[in-house]
Length: 509
Image (cartoon, rainbow, N blue to C red; front, side, top):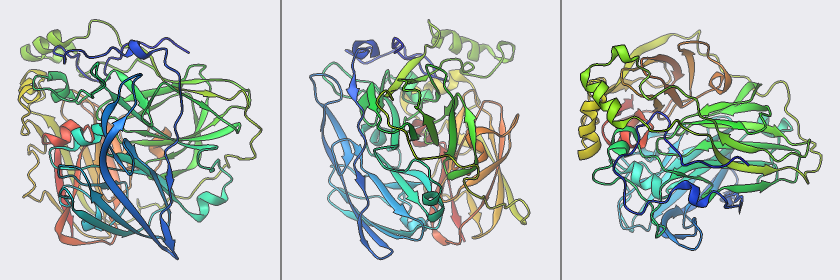
């Protein structure tokens, strides 16, 4: 395996004020742990009705050697079980809040009634329960669920309130893809965290300028809550359902032996045809499904490969005085390094009978339908200046991160959408860093961006990464759900940006 380096953030500034006693990632670089597959929870089934009971709870987890870390989880001390249901199911989820703070549980990527969405408008008080009920009306996909409490999403997800939600359908189960959970079909939740010497997690401190401005990143990589895991596989063809569960970090993923793999799915489900690749870029909240062939008996390591453009995407000649000063203050002393995610051991894998067929699915084409509305969502960090956003980083301001020049106001509706209609949204990034933009209750198609739409972006998406100065157009059809009184959200999925104002809301009428 490659030597692990102390991590430096992608598209982020270097931390100049750190908490005392923070461990360097290299302190754990020789760790070798067993890959943990989250528990699979299929609920209690009564015909097409499926019932889940989820407990939001605190606990302690051994993430680092010899110390315990206080964590939050769902039905377990850290993170959540993998939930699975089928298209056509009626899902009933009872969520019990056994924490000492108010929280929510959002169904990310699910098309569902607004009252069941689990966003900021469905808070669950301590010792209270919330019932979320919805029908699965969408095709097979790798979705997830996580806390979405107003102004607290970043902290609560960081502590562990997140898990994967898998939907199956008749088509996905007829294709012959690797699909035996924990045998040749694995969830891979990638997160970065920072720890104190006593094992406690380091979130945003009062003077964490980098975390406040750019989103919280950590110097220790976890996969399903485990550092440096080794996945020993039984079958030669495996499916990895990769979720970027980090608060802010963007990953460039490839194998250290440069082996190719097939991309079969994106946020909203299977692609129409697989795409062969050797590298994928995945931003916070995105999901990518890949199939890896290990019939050579190899032991590849999935790594993050450095090499993305700098933080701003701005030419030095375009920077004003304050931008130049800020960049000189926060410039990284060393170039970003590659680092390991996890290793796969295929040396004892038996030949697999699974396949990747030529045709995976057929996508609905909404391009010929009447476009009911065109909207523009312009993302800004104050005036685009790193200098002015330092204020937000230090003081936790929630009015310097905006969409269409407005920061989030839970009492204001930003858009009214008609149910069952098709819209095109243009997401404009007028800031100096990349933003992963997420829309609740829909799966959209990317129809225009600088350069070609390719790779996993050929599929249905609910998150799109928009680079500095870039405009991305997405086309979506809204489900038939309507509720004039309960909003859905749209926001940057860098969680600290969402918490500090880069979020808006719409109702479907």
